[in-house]
Amino acid sequence: MSLPSIKTLLAVWLGKGIACVNRTLGRGGTSLPGMAALKVDPALIKKLVSQHRQVIVVTGTNGKTTTNNILAGILIRAGYRVAWNRAGANMKSGIATALIENTSLLGKARTSTALLEVDEATVPLVLADLQPAIMVVTNFFRDQLDRYGELDKTVALIAEGAKKIPGLKLILNADDPLVASLAQRTGRDSYFYGVAASRWVSRVPEQVREGCHCPFCSHCLEYAYYHFSQLGNYRCPQCGFSRPPVHWEAVDPDMAPGITFYLQEKEERWRLSLPLEGYYNLYNVLAAAAAARFMGIDQKIVAEAVRTYTPQTGRMEEFNIGGKRVLLVLVKNPAGFNQVLRSLLLKEGPLNMVIAINDLDADGKDVSWLWDVNFEMLAKAPVGKIICTGLRGADMAVRLKYAGIPEEKLRIIDDREEAVEEGLNLIGPGETLYVLPTYTNLFPMSKILSSRQGKRK
Ligand SMILES: [Zn+2]
View 1: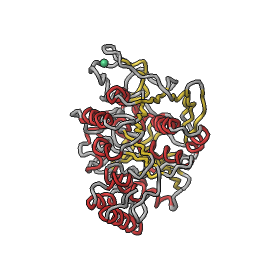
View 2: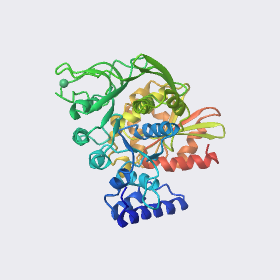
View 3: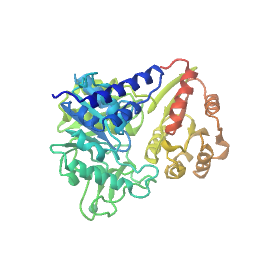
View 4: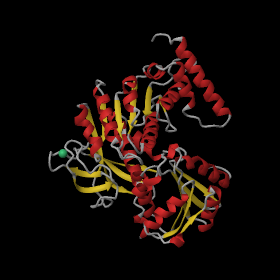
């Protein structure tokens, strides 16, 4: 390998310096080191990533952080030395930060595999630099504000980018027509994972606007069944595009507690258990297991890494406050919110919740996305009380009222700490309070709950 340039070294040192200061101050800061370093050397990502033997990209709308982290756990257990953006900072700056962290002061990579979660809109910008061998795609959901076909443009750009990477292998979600369409659109070798029909599927679509249309001819797709949103077993009556045959299929899933299912590979069937809740996490573990198996990693190693997986802060965090259980789950778009609600409906006993909605940049500035969430499913559920907080707590309460939740079950409490306090008062020991924040409420809520718990689990 050639020696790194002074520019590259300066960029690495600056990035490491900032990361060090961040750590000393107890700040997370997963983007700043990379952002500063890229200003010094704009080609830094390419220079650092090219020192790796293999590069794996994980992208999609929802589930990339969980998928990426599960896969990292598997690879590490299998003996790989892995650089990965574990906290989910998935734009250029976050990618650069992760690479810098795993680079020596002399500018040499200490890792041989780069496993990078990449924001779907960032993929077209970095694919040529990353030159991945494998790209795993989770799903393409319309995010809150995608009313103008941004997602279709993004997917088209991803396809264009992927076409230009020779030898790229795609690991695709067969149940999502938009993701599955990448196989034909890129002409790259594609391998599919999917979830088999089970007692969890439904025959009617959820009220989410995404993707009923064929990605090739725009005709309305016909579904034999749905898992959620546009995920399911689809077929286009006009052009014949349909759910492709899968290489890895999740069979007979069981949802509580945790997720258990059989992974069907050709004639073989073996069991996986993941200590996470939620049907959507079934897809995340399936995607990670599919990628690992594609890489030739032993079933036993995959199963063991999955079984001992511990989630990163915030995606799904559990607190124990004086014997009361609090589950903190990020909600960021209609499809994700629907999944969280569906998994809550599987629980027993009255549902008590604190929903914290903000409308800052990182949350999405237009809260009208709340009208795309199927809160109507709560109307028939045993709801205890729902406390609405955050900058747009009142909008949330209005939405719930229109969804058919009786007014006496709703409360608006502007102050987050007070909202949590009130929520805890609603439940007894052994019961669970669900706290559902948007992005900018997530860390404040996590802090409030941690301090109430005294010591984090
Ligand atoms: Zn079609």
